[in-house]
Length: 243
Ligand SMILES: Nc1ncnc2c1ncn2[C@@H]1O[C@H](COP(=O)(O)OP(=O)(O)OP(=O)(O)O)[C@@H](O)[C@H]1O
Ligand SMILES: [Mg+2]
Image 1: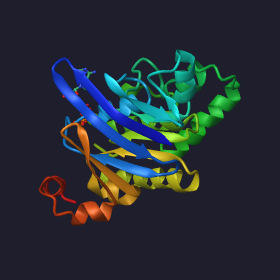
Image 2 (image 1 turned 120 degrees about the horizontal axis):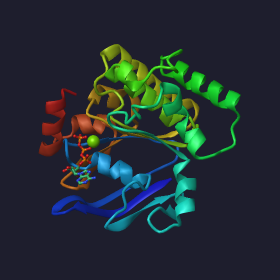
Image 3 (image 1 turned 120 degrees about the vertical axis):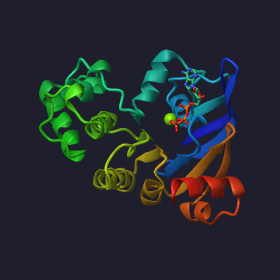
Image 4 (image 1 turned 135 degrees about the vertical axis):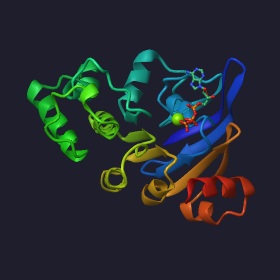
């Protein structure tokens, strides 16, 4: 379970998170929506301790990530897979090196063969078999995204945070990624947090939606409740995204 309690964060005088409260239960598939710049990516980064709050806390399975020692933070981070918005691959590294990085840098004692097999398996899963030796510069935007996804999955995490998993992908590939997100969440009981602008993707993958607005969680509900909401702010958002 992840508990986000009264989370506040400013960058200079840009007051981004203004008291976010949200609980995400184990095994849940939650979509976070909200206008561009409202703080969705900033919120995700707080969940894994890549950003620290000004006040408030994030608790992962009862442990507050802003109050623990560094070694405990690394232990908690290993439970997470993070698909960054824009993939965030290292340009000087091959696809293989990028994907295997979480296994290698954490020094988890895997053999060369185990790592090679794990990378092949995840590349199959994201529909990019045999691309181990390519460099990011040789990949399309959608391929980079899928390599980023393979890297997020490499440690078989309990929690996966997806920051815009389908943005920039064609509809066929978007559907394939949605299927994968759903499969991971349903079959492997992974807890999924999906930040997205793609409302079709939300409908396909999420059981619950939380909408951010003005630095807070403005609405929690099912996709159906969001769709049927008479709230003007939600309606406006939904209309814009063509849901
Ligand atoms: N590291 C940072 N330093 C300073 N400001 C930041 C930093 N990260 C984010 N911000 C600011 O915080 C605000 C929220 O950014 P964030 O990336 O969370 O938006 P978002 O909701 O993910 O938007 P989008 O849908 O466009 O991805 C923006 O005003 C952004 O400029
Ligand atoms: Mg973002």
